[in-house]
Length: 166
Image (cartoon, rainbow, N blue to C red; front, top):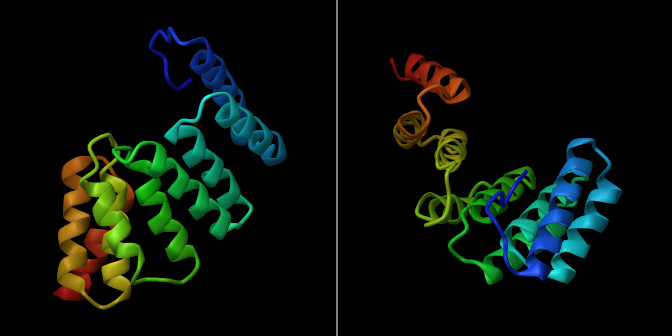
């Protein structure tokens, strides 16, 4: 699933296999098994991905404080990995915090190792819209679409916002 390249380090290879099992359990909504397998993966060879996805699993259980803690651990392992920054921002939104999340989305946007920049742009746009900063929201919906032109959720949100502005 993830980490498809050849891995020479046996511990990392084992950790990746455990990570992939954990991901499958998570997608099957077996969160207890996923948590156990992500933790085992981290025990064998800590990766930012395993910490981030462990946090994501906790978020499905609405345990946002634990999810944030795992994302912070991911950043400690690899600060260039963008996913945990976006995830922290999303968990803060879930907790109703529309202010502290902004810096995390901005950090995700500029992360070196991140392929999904449309998401922090979209999330930032939602935050700005919620806070009444409509022009900034429109800008970030547009940037989300620049990153991912077929992102229908961003397209629809931008159109709806443009109707408000007209």
